[in-house]
Length: 128
Figure (cartoon, rainbow, N blue to C red):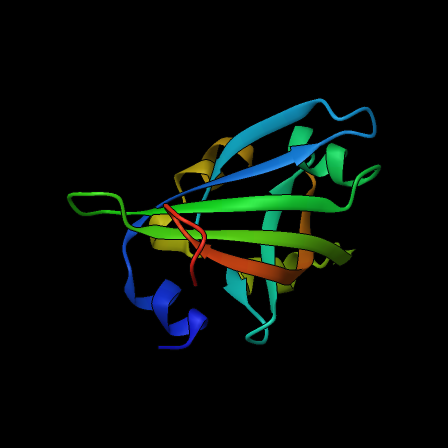
């Protein structure tokens, strides 16, 4: 199954991790990634710590835990490749029915941040 199909069909929760230029790590709950291609994803970000960290350190990780018993999911290792501020595109991509954070941060500046997927690992272990 393609990675984009996996994320489209699989329910679960995600956590993104970024670090600043000094290596201080931050974590935040994030929804499923938006697939641009099989190797490029995007996240909609508010003007908060995760986005701020990416200004000085372009590397991030995304952990996705499936909504089922046991330990299943994916870990994505990412490199930021670009970002843009296009409210119309962001609104078009946003999953309106499953985005409770949007109501909290709807008035903050939003960014569409694109990442290259460098590596994909299962939730547990090191085999693909």
